[in-house]
Length: 428
Image 1 (cartoon, rainbow, N blue to C red):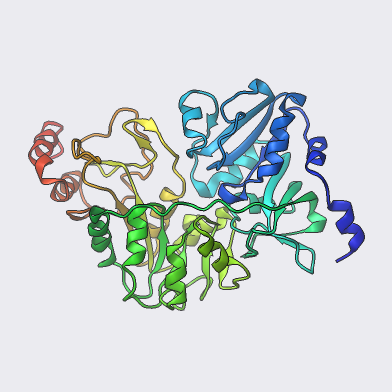
Image 2 (cartoon, rainbow, N blue to C red):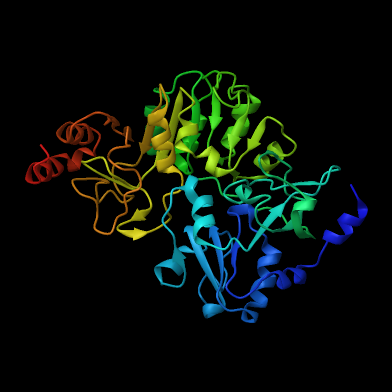
């Protein structure tokens, strides 16, 4: 590696300030791709600019600019809400752009200036390449097409795939040293295990899995010990995949694309996961406009998509990004994989939920969605719905058939009321 180039590109955090102009659109990766020190520096100098917007999915750190504390100087534009941005959005302090995850790079190209990409990265290798580590997401799609400024963290694992960026392609980098954020393991309940068991029975050997986030997907991963030749093509890589890969259950031998490889677009878990990813050539981190493209997903003939929702109506509409009619997250990749599984020759899609709210007072299966709910997976893309009481197969079913299927997996104490409501709305 040419030492002169390295010295030229090595900067201080303050150097990023000169790269930002009024009205710029800055793009930041999600989760551990978030460059903490660079964002701290920009916030400390927010009043230098007007009209600067920072675009990001799933922010990790709750910040004053997310809450609109700098007015028009510096604003947050979210593409998926997190604990760091949810309250801010509900208070009208930041923006939320509706999207399917695979379309985010295109949306950003078409609706922003893509002025500057700020991203965390692993240290440079001997050939002059940095890796975006736990991430590829939407940011990797801009490599070579927009200026990058990197925050190089020695704790970031070096991963491979479509998230490599050469020192000649960046405006500069800084060195930092702080631990990566580790996601808490979700608490798995007996209801989660019952739901997981209903899904696992329908996963064949040699299937390729997409598994979402949360307790139910984690429980499903824990039930796969007796399966063989499982492949992974998913947006999110989590801790559960590590044990399955090390046991040889996940090997990707029967995949139709990227045979033998675990494919994802970002990773979020514990140090155990990050250590597994480091220098692991069996994992490919690829841009989300490829990983989550339903047309790509559909090339895996035995694709199984597993996600969660908070509410479903008798038409089959899944409201997965709102709770009680108020925004909680966003669409993410749920619809991408629901559609992709439909394209796959032997594909199956499973959307899971508890039959009732936590206190048991409200059925999550409803004649109509709660007012204010956003439909994440449409009635035309839904396949199987799973509760602790069984599996409703909705694909190709009429509305009256769907209603009966969903009644069969509703909590028993609500069935009579739900059937009455269904008849009242003319659904049976």
